[in-house]
Image (cartoon, rainbow, N blue to C red; front, side, top):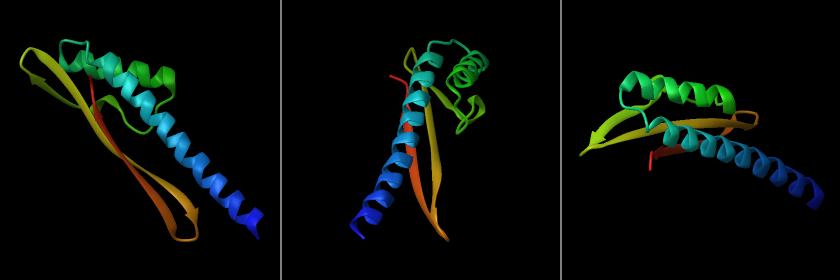
Length: 99
């Protein structure tokens, strides 16, 4: 019985870790894209980085691009659903912005 519970928890932790790794890749691509000067360039840079890092959760068109003073700020907000069992899902919400 304890082994089954530990195996279930291991699967859940593995799924959550994978979504966090994906989040870190999105953050890295966002930081790279923020170096662009135009909205089209920023979206294109993000899409290229997303293709290299195999990011499928978000695309360049989903980014929110603003300017604060003389600095370009690229922000993102998305969620991932992880199927647990039956009708149960775990929803992970991620948001971030360029540094």
